[in-house]
Amino acid sequence: MIQNTQQTNFPFSAIVGQDNFKLALILNLVDPLIGGVLAIGDKGTGKTTLIRSLTNLLNDQEKIPFVNLPIGVSEDRLMGSINLEELINAKKEVINLGLMAQAHKGVLYIDEVNLLQDYLTDILLDAAASGNYYLEREGISRYFKSRFCLVGSMNPEEGSLRPQLKDRFGLSVHVSTTTNVKVRQQIIKQRLLFDDNPTDFTAKYKNEDQNIATQIETAKKHLKTVLINDAIIEYCSQLAIEHQVEGLRADILLLKTARAFAAYKNATEITKEDVDKIADFVLNHRSLHQPPNQQNPNQNENEQPKETPSEGTTSKEENIQFLSPENDFQKQKNAFTDQLENSNKTISYNQGNTTATDTKKTVSQYVATDKFEIKTKHKKSLLKEHHIFLIDSSGSMLKNQIIAYAKGTVDKIATQSKNQNTQFSIVSLFDGEAQHILHRTAVLKDIEIALTSLKTGGKTNLTAGFKQIKGICVDVDFKHNLHIITDGKLNAESSLEATVLAFQTYCKGVHSTQIIDAEKGMVKIGVAADLANRIQANYQPLMTKKL
Image (tube, rainbow, N blue to C red; front, side, top):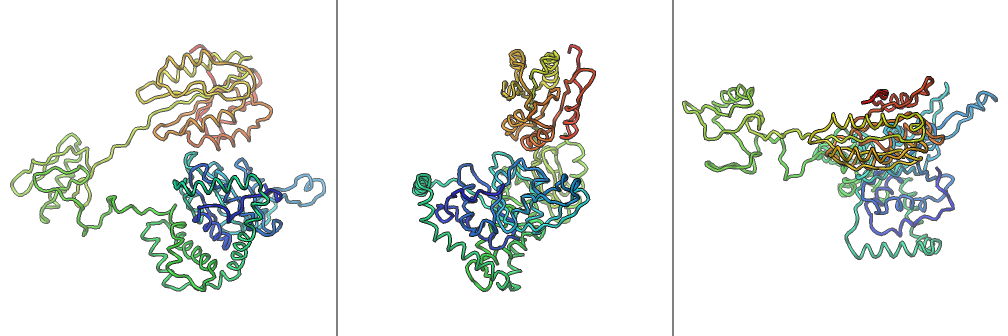
């Protein structure tokens, strides 16, 4: 939605701290083709407050809008749509502008961007990077300009953003909670002053915000006149190589961002200091560079290991190396390869006419590199199974007397899945709400008790259930399997489209999904089957015989 022009937002210049985030936002206002800013940080750090404060730097809300994108936005609302009534009745092509077109020459903000559907995020990032997009609807093709500053914020606790999408954001900043008591005191005082009298507080910082806005406008005008010499281009490429980034996007963005920074400073050319100032913004979310204290598996063969075990001593398994004379290397490597086929044998190698047996390790514990170095083979950790049952205990289920069969299905799955790495949870859909009636347990008796006390009645609200699932699937050490038992008779406020969108939004942590269709009768509406197809879940009808 377009930001309400009557709303008073916290002044940009009055915000204490977050200097890097401020600078990243300013640089995107100077050059929107940088591709936006992704703010990653703790909840309650003022990310949204700072982003909304950008409206104080936009002089004309009609020409420079601030658009707040809701998480549940549809593709038509995002890109635009054709007014079918006008097209059919009046034979007129009337376009309902999408939010991306409305945000042209302004700011488009997405709170909790990691919860937005991936394909919508792709559309947004493409439009932000190219400055335009095409609307293809009902045989009509329209071109729209969409050169906006894209700003997204996310809390990693609520889920991650796909690496491919994260890379598409031009810049990123990490916002953390300050531990400086003096700074925290100043932030609290500023907030209280603003809440008590927003008008007077905003007026106090109006001149400072205006100075920043003027500086941004000046930078825009001479952005393309800033000189970029070959030495700077080489320096940017070298930085990208050192950080082991994929592709060339980082090289280009280092130059674009440094140019915007130089223009903002009213400089005539880019210096290495300018590149260093903004390098973290570009490389934070793209760097694959390992810290110096981590061993590089592709270590240059001329480099010496940090620690070499001395003769007669025992080192850590990660650093064990079998060294041999150069002329015996291939012979020993071949012998080792033959023995690798049998993981129960121990390592032995010939050195001259003597068989070295002082150092023996089980082959299954190690893998060999081309240098005949022995590395620890990390065993693949087994994720624990977590079965979550989302049970529709609404009135329609009670009416058809099938809630008992649903209970039997849960008990059967739980019994079949029982092992030392399995846990179970139950969420009940009752009276239009979702209740987490059984928290993670490995005790089958707890499941039986929870099912016995299951309440029935009211309407079916799957969306409320999916919101509960989001909070349950936070433990990455578990493989979360969702079992939905429902007859598909949704309440009047919930459409199939809205239910699919809710699943895609809140159930990203689910590994696999199964829908057990409890609908009975001669005439079936088939919503559960349609839902399973839309969310790519395994589908099966509920067994009506006693389990």
